[in-house]
Length: 238
Length: 238
DNA sequence: TGGCGGTTAATTGTTGACAGTTTACCGGTG
DNA sequence: CACCGGTAAACTGTCAACAATTAACCGCCA
Image (tube, rainbow over all chains, first blue to last red; front, top):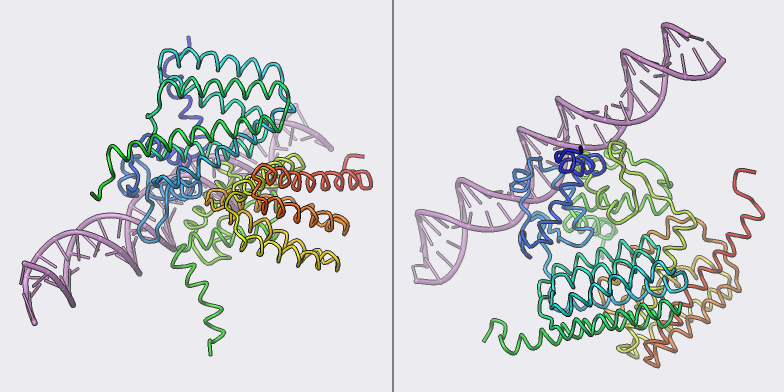
């Protein structure tokens, strides 16, 4: 019988072997940032982190450098690393990039798509449909991520995957989602079906267009929600 | 009279103030890699580098972490950092990404393009025309980079710039270019004129298409050249 | 002669200490 | 009371030394 210890420890050992402390520290800090444990603007105090993670400052600094390169923190000379925050303009930038990258993935996948791909995507869409009917936003969002990740992976371009993941992580710094309605879920999933349909036709150009439009509509939905929010609850300054 | 000392030293001071050693080290190692001074597969020996750059191993390690995150080196636990090399499949990946990103930039620029942009692009194209006629490949390539960088910058999306720069750097690891013909230069520049024309029409979709096709044709030209090269000079194993 | 085990040199991983900079605090002064 | 200068604490930047791992080398044995 496989002991529960193995299950718990194995990943840690693997992490230590493959990523060598600096790497685990990086992943841990990244987790803290993405979970909101370290809020935007917060300074990453090297001493505090080194004590909390029980390592010296060397690996902490290396991890911060890597996180700075990936765009999650901002390095200020002689002051340290600060958790990046996204304002509305930043979020729009990330949305535009996600639209382009998502659409590129679809257009790359279209010519090489297999029935297996289509089946996989259909299954996710069906699950999303049920989540939408139940207004289960949490599950819907997870499935939505899975859907797009599926297309990205299937496009078979490791650079594409890396860049997309980076964009998704960065977008999570923008803590203004949770403001969608059920109708949006239904709309969104209808668009998903369209995307799969164009993929099945192996139409690269159309796959690009509908995928881009899908994300662009998401961007517009968010902009609208933000504008509404601003009117109801104006930002500080009045 | 501005002394030559100022000209030489000023950038160094600025680098030290803004990037703080780790940053300069990173830039310097990056330069060594991109210039070919450190060939693909080479291990970055921390002690050697620290002696050569007159710093301790700390900053070197931080720089390597950052370079690993940006994709120029590969980190192997307990062995160190190795300069990445691109095989043909990698180059194809980067080409596809560059096509998508370049085209996305054009499609983003199209709706907001200004006469000033058009003039700037025309000027670069004219210079390229002269370089092509003179078969000056070096100058043509520089101008070509400038042309695309111009569109990227004008698209006004900092993430786009960052990702594009990353792709260009990575592509430079693929040391198999220099095998283009004058006719290709002419063809390429004709495509540039088409791109500017579609931008001037503010046609987002057409801008995307012609830009994507432009890079895709570059990819095909390179694949063809590589195939020819392989036939004339088969890889080791025969 | 070919492979195996142990030893040693080289290199990475990690740590703690020291130097330089920034920032907060506090008393003095106009 | 506001402002300014100086001092001290906290923090980042850098470094050199130590521990752990890897790889090469060499003698030994079948």
